[in-house]
Each structure stands twice: as C-alpha cells, then as structure tokens.
Length: 372
Image 1 (cartoon, rainbow, N blue to C red):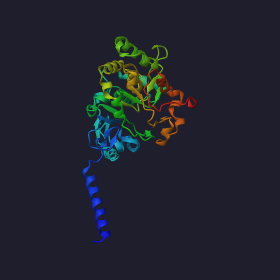
Image 2: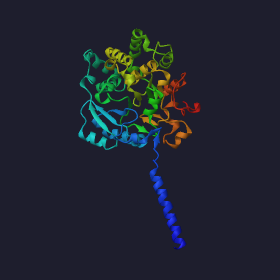
Image 3: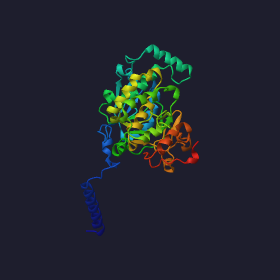
Image 4: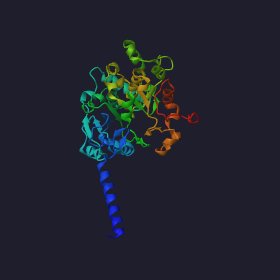
C-alpha cells in the first residue's frame, strides 16, 4: 500500500473521530444575564411575567409603529416581551394587523371598561366643565380636554386592574412617537426583579403648578388619616423643601416607567388613589398620573426600590435622557450634552440622585460642568 494512501486514511480517520467526539458533547447553552436565551423566544415563558403596556388611540397608529420600531431595534427583537394595547374604544383591524406586524412577540388588544373611562357618580360635571374653561383661560395645556383627564385617572388607578394585565408582575409603559437612542443589552425586567426594584424612570421634572393646585393639600389630608403612608423622611425631602408644607412639583415623568404591579395593587396605594379620586381633582383640576405615581413612590417605597435608568437613552418631546458615561457613546446616538439632567426644569432627577441611598446606574455620574 502506498505511503500517501496510508497517510490519507489516517487523516480521514482522525477527522471522523473528531467529528463524532464533538457530536457527542453537549453543545454549550447560550446565556444572557445568566439565563438560557431560549426563554426569550417569542412563544416561550419569560423569566419575568412582564409586558409593554400601551394606552393608545387608533389614530395614533403611525406614531405607535415608530415607537415599536425603536424599542424592537434597541431591545425587544432579542427579548420578545409581549405587548398589551389598551384603548377606550375597540381597536380597528388596521391597527391590530399593522402593530402585530412590527414584532415577533405576542400582542394582545383590550378595550377599557366604561367605568374606568367615564365620570364617576360623585363628580359634578357642570363644575368640571366650568373648571376646564377657567384653566383654558389660564393657558394650561390640555385644559379643555376631557379625554386627557380620563387618561390620567385611568393611568393613576385602573391600568393595573385591566384583565389583560392581571397575570403580569411588571410592566413597561410605551407611548407613540417616543425614541430609544441606546442599545439595551440586558433585561430591565429581570434586573428589577433580582434587585427588588419596584419603580424605574428616566427623567424627573417639575409639574406645572396650575394643573394641581389642591393635590398636595389632598395628599396631606390623606396622610393625616393614614400616617403610616410616609415610610421614610427622605422621600418627603425630595417632594418638599419645607418639610411637607408645600409640594415642589417633583415627579417622575411617567410616559416612561417600568414598574412592579404589586406596588400599584398594594392596599396602601389603592387607599391613596381612592382618596384622591373621591376628591375630584382629576376632573376639577388636571391632576396627572405622573405626580400621583411619584408622590406614592417617594413616600411608600424604600430608596433601593426606586431606580434611575440613566443608561437607557429615551426621548419624549421635548425631553431627552442620554447616558453621560463615555462607554455609552459606543451604543448610543444621542448627545449627552442635551440630556434633560443638565436643565433646571429636570433638576428633580439630580435631586433624587443626591438623596442618601439613591439607587442609580453605575454610569450615572453627571458632570457639573454640563449643568445649566
């Protein structure tokens, strides 16, 4: 037998043996955040029972698709968390088909119960109409809008009670036309679950005082009846510069929020919302869900249970959250100098971070030279 032929047989035999050995070895599991990536397949149960919860009109379809394209490209094409779309009227076939086409994840569509999007029996609608006219004369945004008030009331006290949300533990709020400017390479839901975080935000602003003239007085009345609602003084320091006499308007901008639904379903929050709801300020004034959520979060939750997602690039007109760390520029296209954290109107973000024990991303350092 020729030596060349023997050598060829030997090489072929070695390759076959190597192939068989490799085939017998269990392939490595691809992990993400220590979790098998198979759980992020579209139909697979996720490591956290969570979803994007979206309150949206049929007429906002183009803006909703733009927002979905953003969150899919930056995050959800890899993680495939489901979407829950809610509307006060039934969704059109066009809306359902076109939003479903934007993602591989599961989508569901629900109509809001009438009692969650209407005037409760104790509201004097004549007084409410007169109040809208008065606010309009003052130049208040959305002063005449009844639907805006229903939206704020729904987001304050009812979204977490919808049947499509009942089986969820966490939600991520998304609105039409928002932009995400950074790749999100980890699972915020899983991060919150592991860290015991109940509420996450990107931007904290001052509220327009004209919209909430009696909100703080109502909150103080509630606290007088339920003093255990205030669990620590640090949260009160963020809300008030004079030990609770007045409200400074600080609130987490709720068009972006990631939260544990157990917080809103707690007896303490439900009692708080019911008290505010009975006071009528959602209709007689223009109380927003942002200050309602924020006051409760600041007073009910411990410091480690709130988190600034400084590393998530987010824009909702006119405010931007853009990460400040140099590392972020490798995965973001926003301008860190234009981030809201440098602006006075968003100083509540810095003020929250400066509180003792504030829970923020490791990259959340803010260069004082950029503050204005």
